[in-house]
Image (cartoon, rainbow, N blue to C red; front, side, top):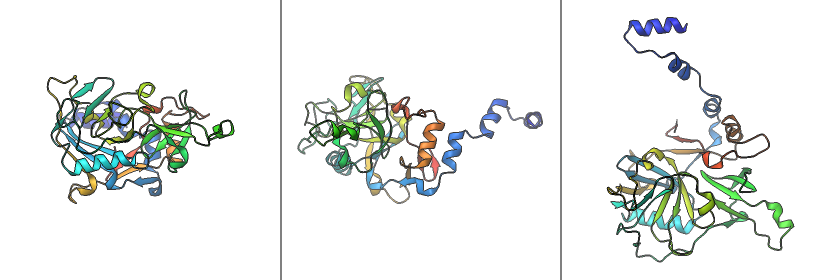
Length: 295
């Protein structure tokens, strides 16, 4: 059959690659898992919690997490709605680390007129009812997700051995995670950074992460590097999805991390071992659909 197809393509002047046919004819196990997932296993993200950032290379969609960082998400949305971020630049961009922007002066020393925010570097587990632990790794007793945001946590069993009943959970500074820049512990204002790589060891529990890129990470990686860059990349516009005209709005769905489909997808992609150990938690991007299409 493949020879017949090859002959037909050649006769019609179409370039043929046997490997290409093989790759496109059979979906992977993980792709089949997603394509057969029940609609109830996908969570539609509230447009109020999606930041749409327009870069010269294209749009970037960020799912914000007010459950973890309500004050920081509120600040970002307020500034976006005021047009504060429009045409500001990414003034500090380090390859293999992050891209920092959100400063109207473009120097790293500026901010908004609003007061600085108190940092939230970790949270009590009991304050995050939607956090879903799924396994562990060598840096956290539990690893899971809050929406699309990767999280680490202490084990609830810790309460049996300590006086306090608090069990901490914190976002992981993985690629695509967006976090507030700061000069001191409680000095976050308007500036933020988007992660290029895994920097959990140096940033976790020290900076307030408030979201993760769910679409357009390739556009983020095209931000020009430098401190400052020779040709800084501008943030053309930043808007909240809920405010967009009807013809520009998109339906963003994230696979529920508490679903059996997500657990099966993790195993199919070799992201987690049979005994619940995450091979590389930062390499896991919760599957996303936009207007019904997988991204």
